[in-house]
Picture 1 (cartoon, rainbow, N blue to C red):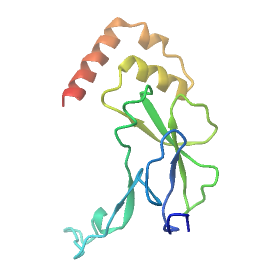
Picture 2 (spheres, rainbow, N blue to C red; picture 1 turned 30 degrees about the horizontal axis):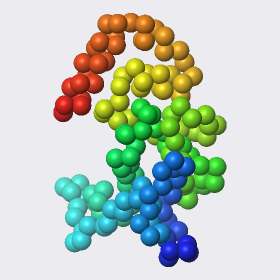
Picture 3 (tube, helix red, strand yellow; picture 1 turned 120 degrees about the vertical axis):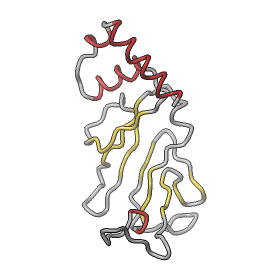
Picture 4 (cartoon, rainbow, N blue to C red; picture 1 turned 60 degrees about the vertical axis):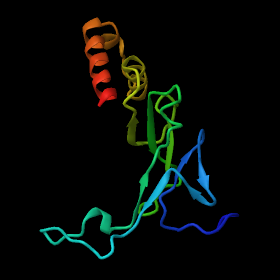
Length: 148
């Protein structure tokens, strides 16, 4: 129970300290995916993914507008098997929690993305950042992805 009403004990929480939009008691970073009705099966007779109720992570327009090029979803300290919970934070933010997923946005500048990923993986980005040919190629790819 929350002050706004009940939430399912089966929800896999995703908490972001910087941005946590809600609709009443429900986190807008999680979108419920309902079970198909009537149930559909493929040729192999296994249920389709949509036949299983679950949540999808949904990062709204607020995230790409931030100065961070890369965000990470980390396992929270209270996470347990079959009762997982997650933290969403900029990749550049220090944490000892394991990375579960990396979130990239198509409009991120390659230079900034390289810098943040190198901090995340604790490696040097100098080789890439000092190569004009590599940066030119990455800028070209970034434009193609943005326009796509």
